[in-house]
Length: 301
Ligand code: GRG
Picture 1: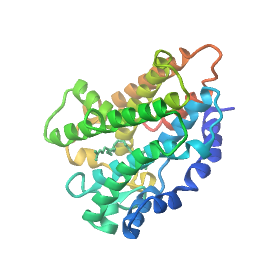
Picture 2 (picture 1 turned 45 degrees about the vertical axis):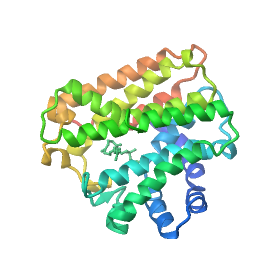
Picture 3 (picture 1 turned 90 degrees about the horizontal axis):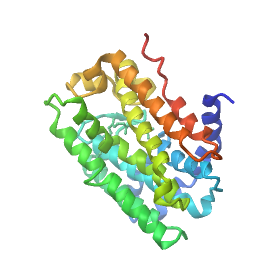
């Protein structure tokens, strides 16, 4: 089956199952109606659910049955956390964006105070959901530590801190890579790691999966930068050409559009090579299919 079809088939099977319980689960676990509405608003505004889909795909690649009765909350915890990061990133004190996932941003709809709290609520609830399961206590503890490392002051928050400090600074490409690894790559790394942890894979056997995750994360950021130049607001559901306007450090900014596309192609190849290193009896086609998310033809040669 062509890889685009494989990804589309996988999404069609899993998205409804991942999405259906969200509104009720957030309402159940939230003690204030307006706060619940603000949290639900951004989580339900769309979103590709790329991160929980990667966790499910990793578990399937390990040959495991994904029992959502046990695993739905720990798998979806990452989506709550990711949504918090988008809400806070859009706030007037950060990127000051009005459009996200094709809808007005949380602070436009609910005000900056409630949007901040909706983000705080989602961030905290994510950790509650990691432990709302009958997985072994050691597995729960590793999920909590790994998500905290990925999302917190050694990961995404550090990347965001570098981002806000570097707006008027011309970063060398090597520094930009570190910034992106923390800001965007860390959560995608965790998405795959979560599948490995839930699947009981020993640390020593995780390396090739995590190299795949890191290449996917870097490709994701390069592609996001490219789409900011060649995409439209309608297609992306958010403002475009923001990076150029704010003189941001981006791959097209550093390498030109063609150079950025070449970097994307090279990074995809590195991710595919990592999957070649999985044990010989592993069917890596589903994880390979995630690379069809990147259209390297968006940039004309
Ligand atoms: C506020 C601590 C804090 C961190 C914010 C995620 C982030 C850090 C900022 C968002 C800015 C940005 C453009 C990041 C790069 C790529 C990215 C994370 C895009 C959004 O993710 P998608 O495409 O979004 O998975 P959907 O809406 O599909 O979930």
